[in-house]
Image (cartoon, rainbow, N blue to C red):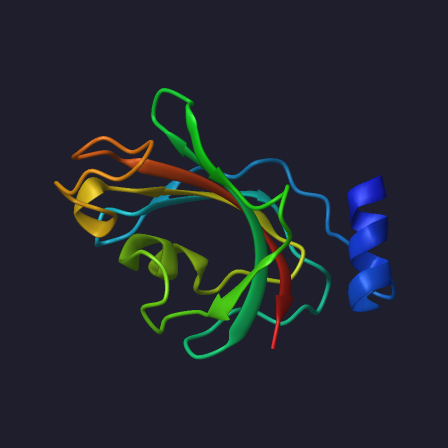
Amino acid sequence: MSLRWLVVCLVFLTCKKELKPLAPQPSERLESGVVVQKLRAGFDGADVAKKGDKISIHFTGTLLDGGVFDDSHGRGAFNFWVGEGQVLPGLDEGLLGMAEGELRVITVPAALAYGNDEKPKIPRGSTLVFEVEMLDVR
């Protein structure tokens, strides 16, 4: 178990849960165009995110060229209600069904991200890539 997971266990008192080993899975393209790839399975018997659940994640957001535009690791977990429009539509969709402890990459096409709006560090029309670790589902 890595040091980061030991900290997660201590913070969320989930030490009784074990991570399931998993080789990275093939990418799955959802009907909307969002692409999801599971890199690590979640905890055995873990809760799975569904619309309206409050979740806690760590994420790194990058552009297709690998440039990082946002990262929660330096400031703490990001907490919000999934499926309730509190994050980009494509990210919301890609998080549904994700289990505690799971690690996945969610690729969000521009139309389900910021579209043609320019944001700091994000050019117009950018496809965004999020590596997301699900810490908690409530």
